[in-house]
Length: 94
Image (tube, rainbow, N blue to C red; front, side, top):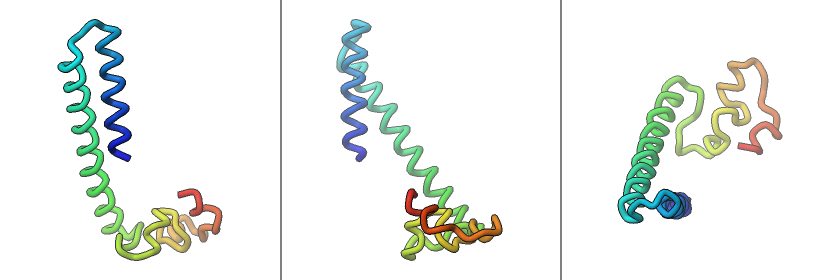
């Protein structure tokens, strides 16, 4: 998935360099660096958010099978907090 994103960033950077008459290599490297930095930042932020949600008890341990259903999984504490059980259809889309 990340390879496809990186390829898209490279192609868009090359297209922008062609349209704006800038250096292909410089423009491509700038956009690839921005893309990689944004990807890393997103990954780290996701890890911290997951830890926070596990600490608050809104999701279960990441190793359990029920964690594949996410925050609104069937019988999750988030569903109980809202005062209702998650229906089967509610977590099929996550």
